[in-house]
Amino acid sequence: MTQSHVESLNAYLSTGINSVNGWCIPHLWQSIWPLYHKIGPGPIAEIGVFEGKFFIGLAKTFGAAEAHAAIDVFDMQEFNLDGAGVGKLEVFRTNLAAHGLGPEKTRCLQRDSLTLSVPDTLALREEFGGFKFFSVDGCHEVLHTMRDVEFAMSVTHPAGIIAVDDYMNPMWPGVLEAIAKMYLLREFQFVPLLFTCNKLFLCSRSYHDAYRKHVLDYVREHFPQTRLKIVTRFGYQTLSVLPNMNNWVDLAGET
Image (tube, rainbow, N blue to C red; front, top):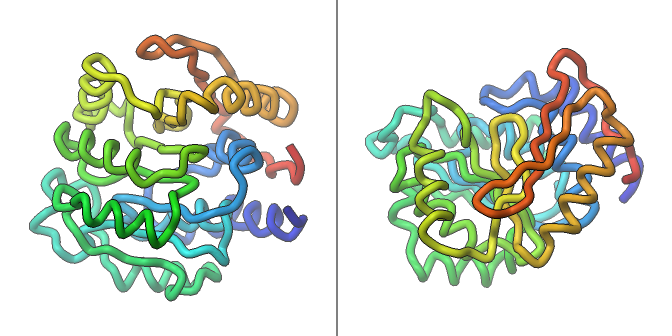
C-alpha cells in the first residue's frame, strides 16, 4: 500500500465523489478502508451501479488497475421495477474515465439481475477469481434482493465483503424483509458483520470476529466522534457504526 493510494482515495472522497450522481457518502469508508487492509487488493463488483458513485470509490480502494464488474439494467428501463435509479451506460463509462478508471478494465453486464444464471456464476468466477467486495444495490424488491445477495455470495471471494444497500431505509422495506427471510429461514456462509451509513455488510463466518475487531479498533483510534455499538443481528455479534455526518476526516494511511 503506497501513500499515493490513500491520497487518491481521500481526494475522491473529499471532492471527486460530489461530481458523480448517486447515493453514498464518504463516511462509509471508515469501515471499508480497514476491511481493505485485512482483505487486500482485488476485483470488485456491483449490481445497480447507477452512474458509478460508489463503484468508483470501491475501485479506487481495492485497485484501480484491477478488472471489475458492473451489473445494471442501464438503458433497459423496462426492468427497473422499483424506479430506484435511471442509469445510463454511457454516463457510467464517462464517469469512470473522468476519475482515472480505464473503461477497458470494467466488464459491464447490461442485465436484469434475475436473469443471472449458474453459467454466469461460473463465467464470472473463472474471469475474476472471486470478488473482494460486492455491492448489492439493484432492485429493492424482496425477490430481487434475495436473489442478488445469494448471487453475490456465489461469486465473492471467501475473504471478501458483500454490502447490501438500504437495509434500514423506510422507503425500501423490501430489503429488510429480504434479509430477514434469508437469515431466519436458512444458514449461510456469509453472515452479518456490521451496519453503517444505510448499508449492511456481510462476511464469511470464518473472518467475522477478526474483521469486526479490526474495524472497531480502527474507528476507535482514528474517528473518535463515531458512535460504535456491538449488537446481535440474527444471532451474530455485529457492529453498528454511526459516523458524525457533520464532518469528514481523511482516512489514515495505515491501519
